[in-house]
Length: 269
Image (tube, rainbow, N blue to C red; front, top):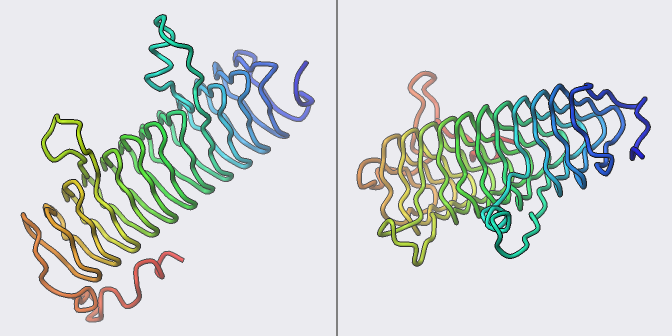
């Protein structure tokens, strides 16, 4: 028997919704969507055509899941168990309320994502990653798993975030930037991504090498390669990146004023 009165929701006749899925009020499910047993969909949520919601996925109320999205994608352990290995239960995925997951996005199981999360199209977030509230992750960007992201972080299009990268609050990545986690690829020993403190700004096409730490409110100019730690509030440029001035010394030439009149984390409030 259904977990909720069908009159309170709209399910396309071609959609496959398990009777053991938990659907809230006013949920809309599009054509050929799949919602497995054990999934929980909050009130006023829209699941568009062809989306797949696997077991152990919880979606907060007022969210939107675009066409052809996959939430709760299987981890490697599950795939091995399907091939005759040890039994494996897919870990839960939690997506906060009022989130917008645009078409083609894949989010793996084991992730915990805060409220008002947004993605572009075809974004990929690998397993066991944590995102805070009010984050955005752009079109064709990829998070390679086991990252820790704070609140109000923004990742523009085509950004790659390597495994074991950590960002505090209000970190901003511009397009085509990349972090890496191995000093001697493909060696897997001692993998560790960069650590970015609050308010850091990463310009377009920047490369952050493993284990570097970027201090609070640091700014990395476009196309730079960061090979060493950066002091808080410094602007760095080049390959390898070197400090050229303090953040408060940067001026906007269009309006003849300081470019950063307040800290970046204050601008985002």
